[in-house]
Length: 428
Image 1 (spheres, rainbow, N blue to C red):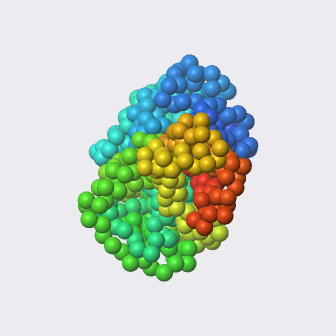
Image 2: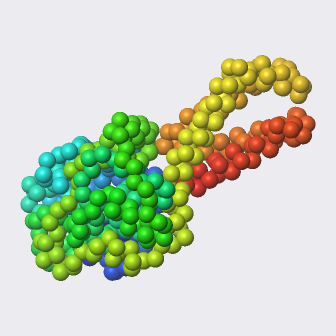
Image 3: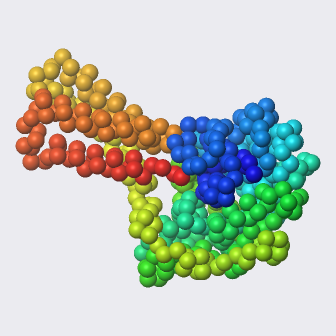
């Protein structure tokens, strides 16, 4: 069977591609333009901006395809995300192209609860996409999973791991209960319904067998990681609202934080449902979270990720603040000191222009680190700038290496932190 899988670099999309390849299916993986990571073993990779791809584009991509699996999704609008375009308008063009190309089987990943009243633009646009598909003469299957957890650390799974290593567990007010479901169970269900012989024209809720609060989910992960229970602290509403607003601000800069206002609205509703029809049609009983975790011992990489979850945003903010701050100081109170140093180095004509150029370079690098679409080249620029400052300082004023305040020695930890931030930058 030849499958076209959208969202092929996401958690569910990449897992679906891998499982399909292992089962000897031919896979056409649809990824974002410029995506660095490509699914291994697939027959073909297609770069597509789901917000802009039209029916003609999809018709060409669908050549020879037997079934389409749509795993694309975004939590909230931001610098690189447009829920309405991805969940509804953009993906509707793909569904309509399936009608044109005679590709009847479409498996579409939605979200649990979207049909019970939209809490946010995420659920509203997901429901609009569901309805666009259901209106077409296709053999469609709409899968509505609850919070999906598994080996892949993304979205809710990343947040839960991060919360599991905190000495104190912060509780957000007004959160609903969760019936978490396992990634491998969802992927098996996707491939089950991608088969042309499977039932069609139905919507299924994929939910685990137990209802837990978020604190209960985190507690299971703490036990799995070998950590003692954490003291729970309920956050006041104003502080929770501030955290969500900070997450929204990060989203507008192109980052994908787990804590954003759409997530807050969805968490109030919770993520619960009835898995009985899912079990009846697939014959697979969903496992509890404890059973799933017990089946795979925590690795060193799991422990590293959990600890680094909170350190990545700290590193980004600290580095951006450092570079922007040094630039502003150089243009302000430190300007005379900087120009005097360059005069002492024998470059009086370049003193003022050199300080200004260096300050502006620092500010540009710092601002670039904050803006996710250019964070990688900005961090590379920060590394190169650090090396440049070290080299020119050594040539022009080697006595700085003997300064007891260590201005040259302090370049090394900044350089190291830039490299660490580069290593942690991947989101999926």
